[in-house]
Length: 355
Image 1 (cartoon, one colour):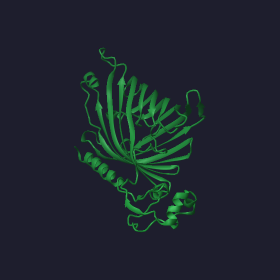
Image 2 (cartoon, rainbow, N blue to C red; image 1 turned 60 degrees about the horizontal axis):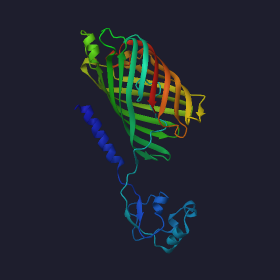
Image 3 (cartoon, helix red, strand yellow; image 1 turned 45 degrees about the vertical axis):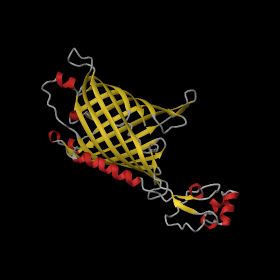
Image 4 (cartoon, rainbow, N blue to C red; image 1 turned 120 degrees about the horizontal axis):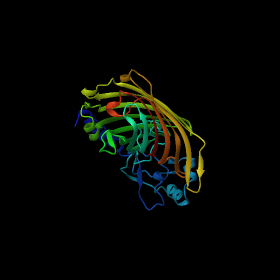
């Protein structure tokens, strides 16, 4: 296990214990009609005197207007005592996915389940197929961190992207696996209003397919695996438009495939002309998105991907999983592991399932 891997695990354990600290919720003893501190989300301090009953003065005018007759009577009579603290987490375990920091729609390395066809790839071949498996899982969330209405969330993500040659040179093969990239990452997201931020630590490991190595015996195997960190900001001016950008840095690269450390990425997503499909209980939303990358290792040259298509989601849960069908155009450099320093253009057609 490498030093970077150990740091990943240590950070996860420390942050999990941090989120699981006891809160200052309280339990009320006695045969009373309701737990008022819980009902009104009262944040009673740990040293609240157990020999002093709660009174009407401990509640706001709005809270008093919501009291039942039995609750008001108990407070007036001075029999509502706080006896002991309830251990509970300050955050929320296994929350829903953040509304405003979903995977980038046109990023060739977004986390989703997908299948696609790629045509006229300058690096890999005339007709290719692609497949990916990936998702991001929220683990812990805090509400109202630093300011009211904000959310701070810790998650973990994993995925794999593979590309296959549908016209291999070896007549004995129907398809030939060329490359697979594996990813694991730990994102921290902070959301306030229509702006969201993400800091991420991640590892990418890349592997050349056995069939490709057998068919190309003189091919020199290198190791472009790396660990990196990045920081992104995402802005939703409205529900139809998203703008984002960020800066990243490679923390560790293999000696056989050295890379200059810095990169920047940015992009936009525009959803338009949405309509409901009542018979299928779905919301249909056409979209256009682009994702651009500039890497120091590639002398900051342009590397962009464009996608045009449509997505479908449940009418009652528009922010849940979506199915997408899209056309794709890529111009810049290959996104496949060891081939990533070679110029590449291609057209594609894909279908994906994810956020």
